[in-house]
Every structure is written in C-alpha cells, then in structure tokens.
Image (cartoon, rainbow, N blue to C red; front, side):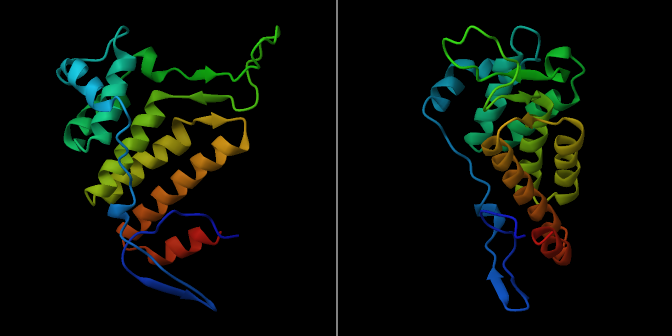
Length: 192
C-alpha cells in the first residue's frame, strides 16, 4: 500500500523497481493558510502574546498562537505553543469531546458520525513539529510529532477525519525522516 503524501521532502529522485517519483521541497509544502478574520483577530487580541494562559483566556490564547502560525509569525507562535504544550493546567491537559449529534434528535449521543475527541496539547505539538521542520530542526520536530501521535491523541470516529489526520501525520513523519537524511526510512514508511 502506498501512503498518500501531498508532497515529499527534499529534492531527490527515488526508484523502486518500476515505480519512480520525484519529490519537491517540503518547505513549500507546509501551508500557512490565512483565513478570513485572522488579521482582524490578531489586531484585536494581540495583548494575548504577552499574557499567560488561564482558565478565562486559554481558548483565545491557543487561537492567537494558531493565527500567528497562519501569518508566518512562527517565532512568537512557537513560544505560545510551547507554553500550551508544557502547561499543567487542566484546560490544556483535558480531553474534549465534540459530538456531531443529529439536529432535532432527542437522544444525546457522546459519539456520532463525525464526532471526535481533541486535546490542545496535540494541536500544539503538531504546530511545533511544523515550525521545527520549517527551521530544519528535524529531531525536535520528530519529538513533538511523536508526542502528538502517541501521548496526546486525537480520536476521530469517522473515516474522513481519521484519514485527514493520518495524511498530515504521514507527511510530517516523512518530512522529519528526509530532513534527518533517512531516505530509506521514508521509502519504507511510504510503502508500509
């Protein structure tokens, strides 16, 4: 089975029997998407950059770190994501359950189609992995990616969310391995 990757890391050409492919630079592949409203949110919530997350601002604090990533202000985003990742506060260590219950249904379901469990530390670890990949700090990126995948798991109950998550993890793992010069590991990983 060949795993899907939007793009692969490092300019190389690999050949496995009759299958060959070229890779493009992963520095162009980690996409910073500035959504509508991100710049306005940044302007109205920039005070969060110098604050400490607490039980009243923790969601906004995370949102500001995410928006800083989108705006390519990764040095500041990194500092904020590290505060989230190393926080011992329950609002960042708890698992959150998001249900996609059917509107109008009188039964409340903990899980339904498209439901998922999230964790702020997972999200912060994934963003930190992306930041470190962009900065060619591949060992650190691999550490945070492993923490996201193995310790601070996000669980999707539908295939769409699960596959999207797996594709992102696969891409980030391949980027780390290639950045570490482990080309054979990437090839083995792709065809596992």
